[in-house]
Amino acid sequence: MAISKIRHHISLWKLKGNAYYCPVCEKGFKTFLPGGPSRRPLALCPNCYSFERHRFLWVILQRLWSERKIKNKGKMLHFAPEPCLVKKFKKTFDYLSADLDPEAAMVSMDITDIKFPDDTFDAIICNHVLEHISNDRKALSEIYRVMKKGGWGSLQVPMQGKTTYEDDRISSPEAREKAFGQSDHVRLYGSDFYQRLEDAGFQTHIYKKQDFFSEEENIRLSLAAENELVIAMK
Ligand SMILES: [Zn+2]
Image: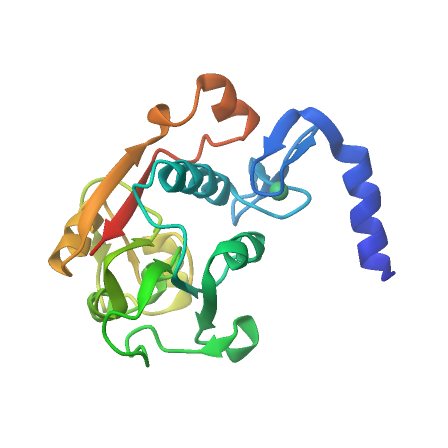
């Protein structure tokens, strides 16, 4: 066993407990770990490395699947695949992951030029990608095009306030960090992001945290960073 793997197992054993619970890997811990650029406390699962947004998404998806509000089978396209979710999706979907970086996924793909015919995928996951893409409207029209009628997508982005802030003249990493919160982000979305989804043709369904999680679960799953999830449907 590699040393890094042994270390991982030792730190996991030390962190085993009941105060916190990760619904993605279904394990309990004394604490979650700090994570994200600002080292948010209680962000990261020490076992599967899920963030708040992954735990939030996974619980809501399971409920929507069991209530048959969205399909839990068929063809899935997963952009910029989050490792903690890949295994989960592979179990039920005819699964393909894609990324611009050929090392990061099963196929290399430009999200503004998806090499698949219209109406191919039942589900498309594209979380925390669009804020990196200059022509995000083209990306959204491509995602819409390759989604089947009746299909669904999770297109999480960081959002703040009501109005999206973008300005092509802000192009250096330092200026982008200052303006958009991260050196490789090209905009900071507001809640008008949902309108952008609708402009691309999607129907949006917004699911609120309080309708899925008790206050106790909010703490135990450490979901303070999340408020709502939008599911985009065709
Ligand atoms: Zn986990």
